[in-house]
Image (cartoon, rainbow, N blue to C red; front, top):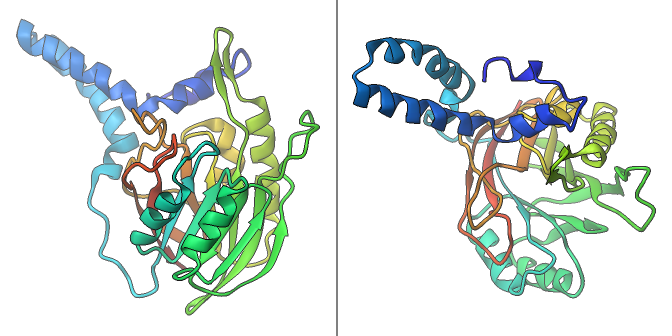
Length: 289
């Protein structure tokens, strides 16, 4: 746990594969602790102090309560709604019912897109869609454009990134919504090259962003510990509190739906109730500045 960066990524992206499930290594410690107690082994209990400290250092802070909400806070929802979702209207109502300021969505396909737009319109009069990603907002949007994050080896039509400016009462924020390529676990390891290439393109776009405050909502197909997302996590803050495992919805094992920020703090992130998607929605509280 403490030296996961030392695991090489050159063969099968094994480092990224380990980092995708890094928090779950704590279960190994729990099993060993139970065995040590059953055997009444003082030596083993002492030896377990080191991995316990390592896990606590890495993830213990996520379990602490978040600070009280501030006046300038934004509440945002991120959700891959699923291109096979059979209840887009119900999904839209559930997301709006959480009362966020912004809702970022991925896998928007016709005719479901029209349903999302129609259902969210009463509470979210401003929205922007590029390709299969979109943002719905309570605040005005301007300067919306496509962000090209398509890997070179993808030849078909592929638009999964947008950038827009949200004019909040407390200042303008550049908001990016993105859906990075999927990864697959195979016998040879983790197939994540396209995801990593797309993350690098998105990282460069955010690095070039002229507005000070930047917010990224997206299905990034990676956890914040995964070195494949380093072009993003090296430039942006991630959630201070909450695990919010979002995928797969039936048995959540990892949070691959992310809310990141530059010149802002993601105070807390948590999941919402299941929708018709194979992802769980996540909701986060962001403090600009």
